[in-house]
Image (cartoon, rainbow, N blue to C red; front, side, top):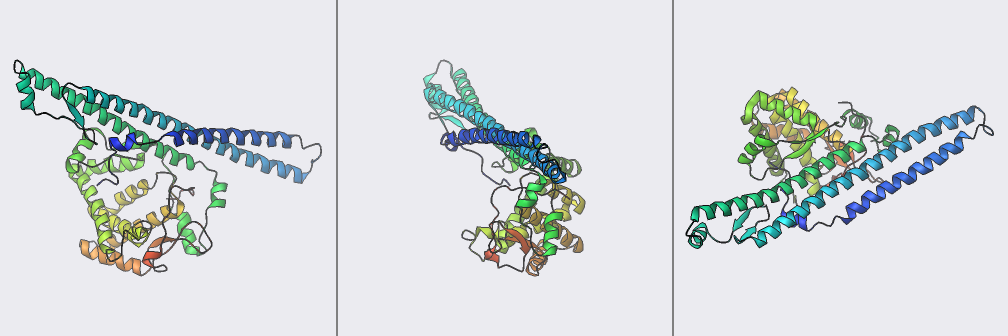
Length: 408
């Protein structure tokens, strides 16, 4: 059910955080330099009335004021990025120190302890061996050993969880910061398809970013989910997405939540099966921003529509895209293909899973879905009709991007 494996101690201890520290400093310095240049330019323009007192001069000064406002917004974004990187790196460094201290305690323990990469702490000797050594008070000895194991394991796991939480929250903050980029800058930098219908899809199938990122599930609910899947990792998500899942639990109970996660896994497997004739290791693009990705989104929405209704499914899957910093082409692709899947389910209410696969596959082949392909002479992928590009010739949109204003 999880999209990535939990962190391990060996991974964390191998990190070099110096580049992150350097990036934070560089962003802060760039913000200061931009602000100084902007204010110097504004001061020069303020004194231009003496020699440029005309309608053209006033127009130039007004344009300069608008540019100054956008530039200072960029300064704020740089400063915010610098702060979040610095604070997150500080959390990482602090937790790594705690992990190293716990490891030192484990190595020095009288109970001959060792730790596993996931944070479990055990003794190399059996309880029976310790009972023989402390024959005069075996119960107390075993209780002391197990208490120390639990304490040290708890410390390691808390540190790993804190690192994951900080990383997820930083990701959400960075994505949210990109949503503050001035609209004029976004529109100037984002390529729009020449096909008028695709251009409309690109601008219409966008959603605004959340104002709050949360880690969900947590507490007792996370414990229950890990009972189904011990490798499950809680994720940072928009508050709207978490609210939709909380509503799902209130309406359908914990079994409904399990069904939700099962459908997600089912959709991933269905997409992999549908395109198993291709070398998916070599052609990762098939399942990432290609035809397999379009199939997965459509099938996922179709199955959730069957189980939970089209209204909730639309609410949830739209909220899922509110992470911020989502490249516009990818966001439009996902939202458009989500709608395709919901409509197929509504048009075929009694369809079996196999019938849904067939219907969705036909829709993709007939060009009713969109995928990503980089046009000649451009550097970034754009949405294109699924029947206008070969399955192995689509492209992956990497990283985050400047968002378009949301309409959905």
